[in-house]
Amino acid sequence: MSSSDSPHYAYHVEWSPEDGEYVATSVEFGPALSHLDLDPVEAMRGIVDLVAWAVGDLRANGEPIPQPIADRAGLAP
Image 1 (tube, rainbow, N blue to C red):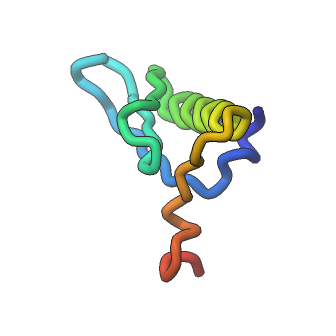
Image 2 (image 1 turned 30 degrees about the horizontal axis):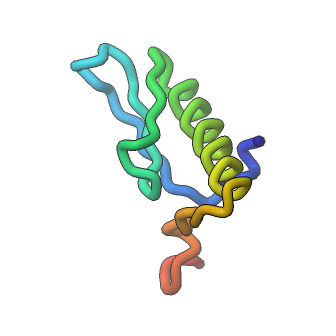
């Protein structure tokens, strides 16, 4: 999977004092998916790749794929 499989998802990166690293999450996937890294940019890259993998896995198994918040009615430009 490539990051192009998850272009419209909303992501969040913040420092985690508990982990001593940045934690990146996807709003649509919630805390079920996260990526830790000492570098915030790498944390973001990691979650984007993880979401792309998850979307591919869901698609391959015929499971519902979360709709990106940005694509929901009234939120897209």
